[in-house]
Length: 248
Length: 248
DNA sequence: CGGCGGGTTTGATCTGTATCAAGGCCCTAA
DNA sequence: TTAGGGCCTTGATACAGATCAAACCCGCCG
Image (cartoon, rainbow over all chains, first blue to last red; front, top):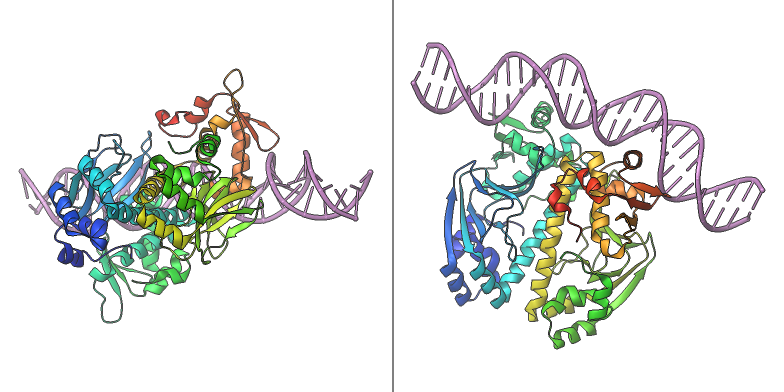
């Protein structure tokens, strides 16, 4: 199960998701205790940069609320998003000194941080944490490979449909399903951020969103509020095997 | 250090690289002993499929010699390579039943396999293995993200240059440096495989290789033998920050 | 109320890469 | 020796998406 219901997490494990994601699955109370002792919180405003690529990064962290992105930028300014961090996702790499990517808050953001050194110590002494982190990293690697197929081989229309399906799917449980089974959600990204995610320009994103609307695949209320009347129809547009299209 | 010299590995740790990559770094003799007991070897001919996406996969493995690829294929036949496995790289995922990608031998290939169940048992009982695997997976994730930037934002010429630089770099220590500092190596991939790696068509790959040759960035002997007279010049063509261009 | 700015849409045009097609090179087998 | 088949190159053309440019929407502030 790639993503947990945030509410369930917080109910089960207190306010810090990493306790669930990284430990709780097989937790022992003294491990929790020790994590508890080294954690602290940081908040960021929408648009704020959490850390720049190349900067010293002396903590690892887990997203509590809000959304952050990992991006790479080329010298001439071309940008590619390489990670989209949702609540309970993990940032940072044990054993690395400096950040490899720009991390930016795209919404207001709260992260639960652990200073790197104590966290690494904890990791070597409590095997469950490394195992949990391994599982999470393997999930991320799978997601990255899915993303590579999208970037390398999908058309603009398929890319947009895929992104909408990903967003609809990942937090389907938080969203309203209207009586007749429509799925409704708000885009957490600007057109430009969508473009950076998909390897397109913002104009192309805008055009393809309009095209999907014109063709009745989605409906729009304002710029950000999306209604998907028929999820299967959307999945057909992604180019993916349809059976991957389960909705939790 | 992302890749180890295969010879050093085999000298140090016997004939099975995973012993080094997954364990040796902090090894204890009884762990080695137990890995030893569950390992076995499999060989494949160039072009042979190791496993199809969706097939049952009851082992994990490590490449001993040769090269394998991970690819994803869409229903209509579009293909994207999502992994390039070199000696000492790891395949398979503890905790997953079925293969997520097609695995293909692009050269003759020898893999060192471990049946999944005993390997998982070993993993839960010896923390070093999970930690080693975590490091390796994080390296792969970094590589995947680099690859995403390439697929999403680089031009065809930059993609080709990047791939050549990656190949040149990864096994620089195996290759001849001629007197005046040229780097020389053989492409392990066909034009079509390069295209699947880069999200291009084989015609575009061919044209851009010719263009780099015409512009003196590389020299060709036959179709596969590459001479890079000036590595820094090649790196300039990749679009990457130059300081990433260290040559081990 | 009016102006302003960020995010967005839409139009016109350009261009890099795909597509379609032909031919070359080299190895192997008859 | 020739024939066949991978693999690769090159040319002509088509087209998806980029680029350049203008205008829209809407919330905010003076």
